[in-house]
Amino acid sequence: MLGAIKNVGHLLYRVWFYILVAVPIFLFFPFLLATTISEKTYPQFFWLARNLWARPILYGMGCFPKVVREQSMQKGKSYMLVANHTSMLDIMLMLHVSKNPFVFVGKKELVKIPIFGFFYKRVCILVDRDSVRSRTGVYRRAQRRLDQGLSICIFPEGGVPDEEVILDSFKDGAFKMAIAHKIPVVPITFYDNKKRFSFTFYSGRPGSIRVKVHRFFETGILSPEDTSTLREEVRDVILEELT
Image (cartoon, rainbow, N blue to C red):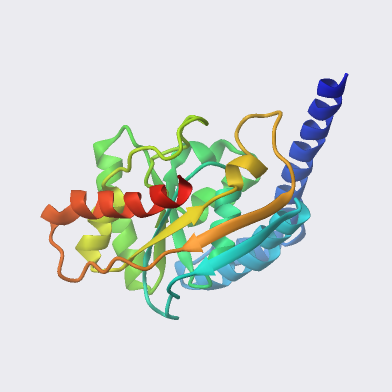
């Protein structure tokens, strides 16, 4: 009986999440759409997504962010943001953490999510991980966005790992890109998102969601041959926090 009651609670909590995702999009649809017509208005879209979408979802779910920063990002400077990936909340929490407008690089499968997918495909850099041509095209599109003064966000595990995996191996893409464009890598640890809202359907509960923004890794003097070293050093920083 107790298990059934818990499952009902988890079901309602999950339904509430999708309501919170959808309602701001419907309410502010004209403004969101207007700011996606041109790449020039992306900073305005980012402000709307951060303040009128991501934050209401986090606080509406009872997930209150607590952010610790070892170093702060400078306004107008581009960065490569990387974090562990365990939950749909990672998207909202990353928007909360960074005031600097950034563009997500993400898998194309997410465009299938109703409502969310409509804007996701308009503003994110989509990648088909099974296509070499698609992965190559990411660099070209990312360069254009960096030239516009934006940052890039990639979850370098390349997907959401199995729940028992603390931190999966990292892919090279984010680190190759950071070195190629000489932008700092910002490692970020999300401690609690898996516990608050994992991909296991009957799970999750409100509570604080802690974040740590670590000291940045500068890439100005690095070459492509340093990619694997940078990748593992960044992963080690996040893994140490999680363990």
